[in-house]
Image (cartoon, rainbow, N blue to C red; front, top):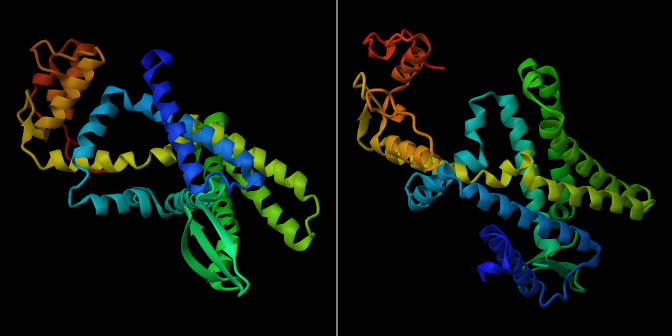
Length: 346
């Protein structure tokens, strides 16, 4: 079977897409509940998922990522995993430490995009649809099973109708905050580029605005120019989905990996620390130090000192001193005096 594909990544992507099509077939009750008006979105989403898994598998084959995946999955059932997942994936505490403005910006952008996906993907794939009885109640159907009944003019139904409008306002607010920061912050202006930093924001902004225009047309203009605007919105979504796995927005679906990395760091941080080969100070766990050595070796990178020590076996101050010695010719890494800011924070 491997000879039928250009690489194992291509094979895995093919199997992933086939599995997705199988779930669409089953979830939509044998394609009987596929909305043809959403056909373009479905094709774009399938391409997005294929591209995402291709990039993820290629990324996962890198030695550092492969190590974190392998050991992180083994540590997935740590007691601290729910708290870590909440901090990293729900409330974004790691960004709160960088300021409330950036935290709010990421909350609006991240959850605006995720909630939009949670709403649209099941509808596009036919996994979820609605039926209405004569008594004025909608029945929410998921994978052919009746999940719940809601009153057509009730609060829950209102949230169903306007879920994408709400997330569109969230994304617009988050994008505006991000653009304001990138245009005003001098450090951001020095480091950013149009294709990598601004283009994703403009795409999200365009999708959100055109989506709101569709709602405005239907409510206030009685469907005026709806076909044209729906095609513009649909193509903007499709292009963004195809671009997403290969641009900056890919870090949104990649974000769950941070839980594995955090578990790895916390678990091995609780084990016996490793002493620096030069000064004897404890700076990291022995397991983490050895992992760095192994990963660099797999990448054919050998950072070994003249004394036979690997740089990963040296603490940061001694590592800096060794680098200085390579430039100056003075064995500064043998000097026992600690740096004045060695224990500084921030």
